[in-house]
Length: 332
Image 1 (cartoon, rainbow, N blue to C red):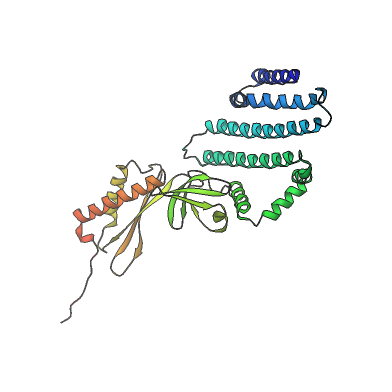
Image 2: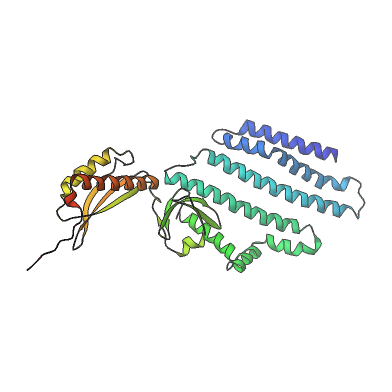
């Protein structure tokens, strides 16, 4: 047993030396942190494997030997599952470390979202396999454990539980990821309110609303109901301001003032065009709409508020005759 423990330590040390010698950039920056975080668990797994194969030479009584091997097999399964889960977490952290946390690039947000969900899916798969393998160490549960490890049984479990809400949300979460319907930091409109995607999990999505509330919805919501994703391909958002003015309003003069205000506002994306158009007519007023681009949804909201206030002030102070009026005719 002492020789088995020493052999496990030696093999673990040799694996570390091999990784240091063989690993090259850019994989070295990912392999080395993973090995350092999982080194002790790797040595424990190797020691358990060595003890498992040398237990029969330790002189234990024959009636104790099967129990000892079953106990070692159980600890080995748990340690191996723990090792894989930890390696997945460290790999995820190392991968996300090179991606900006808050990026306006949709591809970066999509990559972060996929890495996190794939790690969670792999962790769930490892947990199911570990449970099935651990059950095989008990005689009474061996048949059930073996059935969990067979593909046909796993498929049957998935089909049998597909109607359940939890697994339905998991499948919906996978559908959202594969279709790239949303990523973290995307701006969405749900129930006529806009917010930013804060978390995308296999079973639920957390949205940070514009007033800092948190809205948690099951992933099935986004596969069964329509919603707006304002930043799926581009983080820029159009800011809209609508004014109700009198028919005597001079739109060319109003356009000149809107251009001056936009050029003085840092929230406006100057690489994109802006428009001021008459979009509607009522019996008393005309509706004039200003459309301009902002870098993101908070910027678009603030730009709309500032432009609305500035244009309203300009009309009130410089051209009060442009304000909406009610006309009437008197016939004696």
